[in-house]
Image (tube, rainbow, N blue to C red):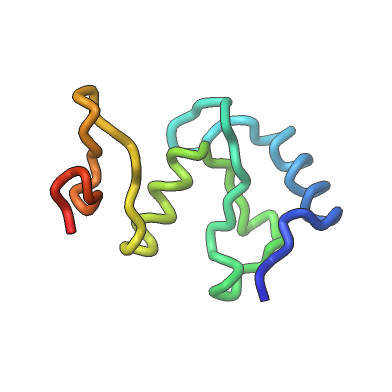
Amino acid sequence: MAFDYNNPKWRKLRNKWLKYYPRCRWCGIKERLQVDHKMPIAKGGNPYSYDNLQTLCISCHSKKTGSRDKKRVTSECGVDGIPIDPKHPWGGGE
């Protein structure tokens, strides 16, 4: 069963976490933040454990999830507008 990210317990914990950790752990920006579970809930990670949480921006969170899953493709582009992910169909990937 999928975790309910709209449940009150999670939303309270998420808001509290972002108050104390308002920057992406990887790149340091303070915008478009998400609270990431270091160990995915689907793989047994505790959704409410502070030890299992980190703040990531959307971009870094996508990179982390994509590198973990390997099958996901990032949509980030270089300055030329070409996707940087070699697996992206527009970038000539598979």
